[in-house]
Length: 171
Image 1 (tube, rainbow, N blue to C red):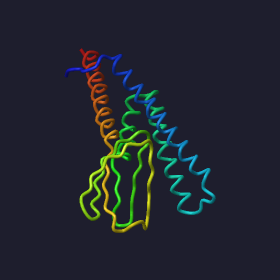
Image 2: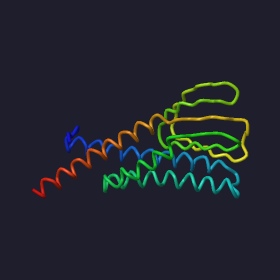
Image 3: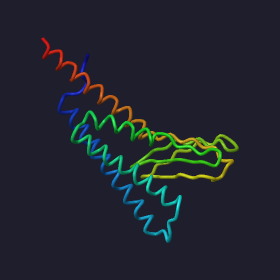
Image 4: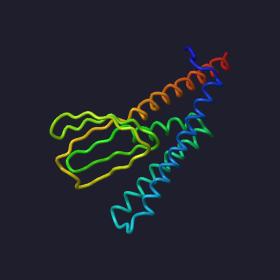
């Protein structure tokens, strides 16, 4: 069991990640509130969608806060948050894309021909029911994928330290 990071490096990287989550959640929430302020009326499903989006961004903020206070548990929940941001799709009149914070999405539009595109932006929420039924689109968020891999690495480092400490205490 070889450790790749010093204790200080591990804690610093996890702390920066937690600040990233909090900042991206707050900025994305601010963006949604700005859009809501420009909307004249919200009824039914639209209001429910905005509440759901605010819940997702709130969960991202909570994961960042928890990562600061209890890194192991926070990183576990952060992986769930990142999984919701990992994949976007549009098919059969339904679409879902949620990316909090900066994202680099690699998309494949399979509607008529295979069209690949890359998008870079900050925060997106797209949820449609009864949209264009002939659209077929798949998006992968490279930033969320990289952060998911990194949180897995940090959890493994944390776990190795925990096991090593328990073995030393048992001896």
